[in-house]
Image (cartoon, rainbow, N blue to C red):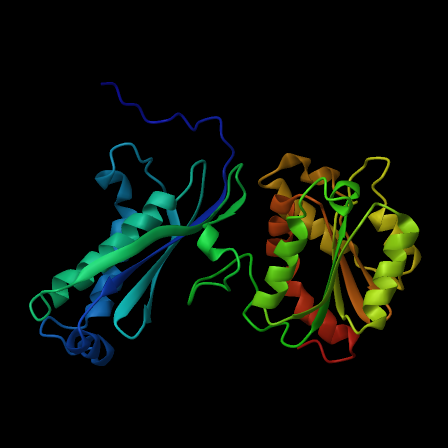
Length: 327
C-alpha cells in the first residue's frame, strides 16, 4: 500500500483552532484524591495538564501523516463532576491545515495520564466520550459537533466566537428570517434557529421569531412590532446580498436612528478568512429607537461566523444604548 502526506502548499494560512474533550470515570476515593491533590504519585491533574500540552506539541511524531505545526497555544482544562473528570484540550495555530488531531491527542494524553496516576488505587477505570467539539479555520470555517450546537462555551477555553454565558441575561430578543422560500415552507429556516439558540445560550429571552418574505414594508413593520413588544435586540437573517430581492439593509436603514457600520465590517473581515464571497455581503447594524437591530446573511455558516465576529459586542452596545458607562 502507498501512503502520502497531503500537499497543503497551495492552501492559505488562516487561524486554526480546535477543542476536543473526553471523560474518565473513577471511584469515589480517586475522585476525592483528585479534588484534594494528594494521590500517592502527586497532583494528578497538574501532571495530566503538562502531559496533554506535551502531547499536542508531539502529535506529528505520533501520527504518521500529520503535518508538523508551529502551535501558537495549547491549553488543558478539567471539569470535576460527581464520578468523572471531563478533559478539554484547546489548540490554536496559524497554519495551512487544522489542529483537530493535536487537540484529540492532547485530550487523550491527559486522560491516560490520569489513568496512569490513579490505577494503583482504582483498578476499575473507564475512558469514554472522546470527540472533537469544534474546529475553526480553513474553508470549512466554524464547525461544531452536533452535540455542541446549543451549548454555551466549554469551561476555561479562550472562545473566539462566543460571549461569556449570561451576557444577555434577561435581554428581550427578537429573531426575523427574511426569505421568500422559507416563508412559504419551500425551504427550512436554519439560520433563524441558530440565532435564537445563541441568544438563549447567552441568557437572552426570545420574544418573537418570525419568518417573512423579502418585502420592504413587511420587514419594517416586523421590526417595529418586535420593538413595541419590548425587544432590545433584534437579529435579522437574510436579504443582505446583491440580488434584486435583497432589501434588508435599505429597509431597516429607512426606519433607523443610526447605522453601526462596524458590525458589518467585522462580519466581512472575519468571514473572508473562511469564505471569500463574504465581501459581497451587505450585513450591518442599526439603532432603531431603544433597540439594536443586527443584520446577518441568510447562510447558516455565515450566521455562525457573524456571531463569532460580533456577538461579544452586543452586551456593550446595549449598555451604551441605555446610557450606561462604557465599562
